[in-house]
Length: 99
Image 1 (cartoon, rainbow, N blue to C red):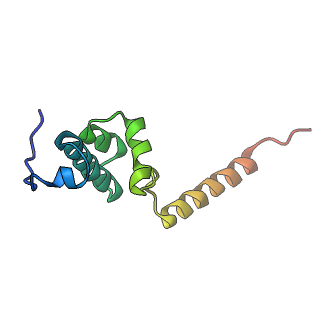
Image 2 (image 1 turned 90 degrees about the vertical axis):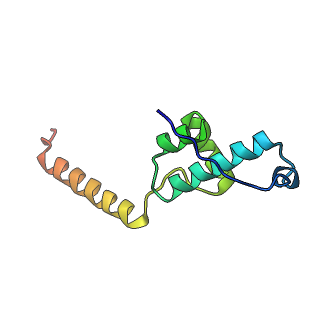
Image 3 (image 1 turned 180 degrees about the horizontal axis):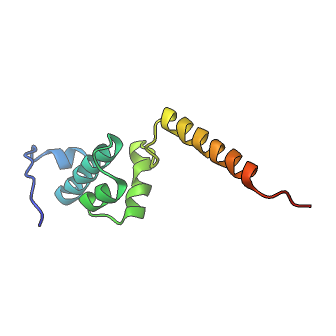
């Protein structure tokens, strides 16, 4: 089941942006999906569905909004790298020595 969001905007707005009303509405929907993805409220899959686009197309469109498709904070990446390094070191200690 889906719901509908109604947004009032000046009738002249699409023309001032050199877009048709349909193009403007699609861009507004995409912009909302991008922002919800960027802020972490939606996954890329959810945001793509909201925008009515295939996920690959949505991820490509993120570039137009200067949004990275990878929404991971630096400290989260550092923690992931630390865990990966620890796992590698543990694995190397347990691996049999080859002659």
